[in-house]
Structures are given as structure tokens and as C-alpha cells.
Amino acid sequence: MPGFAEVYPSTNSITTDQGFELKVCSLPGVVLLKLIAWEDRNHRTKDIQDIEYIIRNLYLLEIEEIASTNGDLLDLLENETNYTESVTARYIGRVIGAMLKDSTALLNRVEQLLVRNIQDKDNSPMGKVMSFDTLAESIQIIEQIYLGIQDKTN
Image (cartoon, rainbow, N blue to C red; front, side):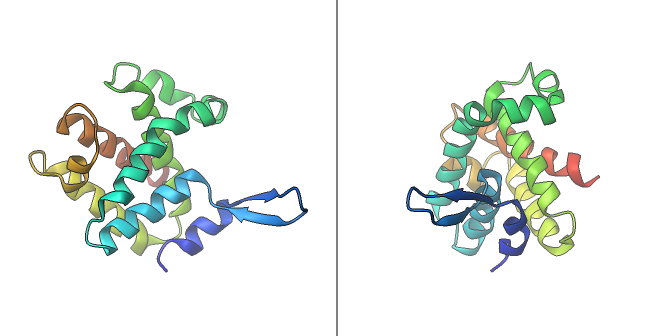
């Protein structure tokens, strides 16, 4: 399955009340797997809706991590529409870029998927599934994921 080998090193371990240790995928890892699944499953809208949900909520969960390891994003994107979502999307892109740094084929695949959805300003399939106020705002968020990947891989 594409993406699993790249996501596995960034899994977290949690221990249940019963003492079982479980490996849990990071949310940026989930976004990577959802992007691949969306392309493989003929654009199943649930995958993009899940990505949007993560983007809308991860900021509050990871603000300390974002501020301490990617604090430049807080200033870099301060004038963006949908500020917290833009910061979160760029952060997720950076984490995905780090995951894919040794997997050129998968990196190219994900980048091409994002670029197609960024360039199609009037008909971005991914952008149309997202529920930001305008298609342009949805594309802006997709672009931030792409730019985050570029930040990490260039």
C-alpha cells in the first residue's frame, strides 16, 4: 500500500488502560494516506472532507508543536485568509515532505496531485469538495500543503 512505509516511522505509541500498546498514525500521516486514497478511489469525497476536518482542527491540538518547530509560519502566513487553516496546511505539508524525503516516486505523485488541483482554478476537484467560503480559498489551502512539502524537500 503506497504511503504506509513512509508514515510508519512517525507513528505514536499509546497504551490503553488494559496495558495494550498501540501504534497510532500521526494526523499529517493520515492526510498523506487520505490524499493517496482519494486519487486511488476515484475521488471519493469523504477523503477530502476528512483532510479538511483535520486542517480545521489540528491547529488547536498542535499549536505548541507548530509554534516551537515551525514558528516562522505564524508570521509568514499572518495575512492569509483562513489564517489558522493556512498555517496548519503548511505545517502538514512540511511533515509530509519530511516523510517523503526518501521516497521520490511517491513524493512526485503527491506533488502532481496537488499541483493539478491548484492549477485548475475553475474546476479543482479537490477544492470543490472542501467547504471553505470560496473555491479560491479551498485552493489556497491545497497550495499551502504543497508549499509545505516544497519547504521540506527543497
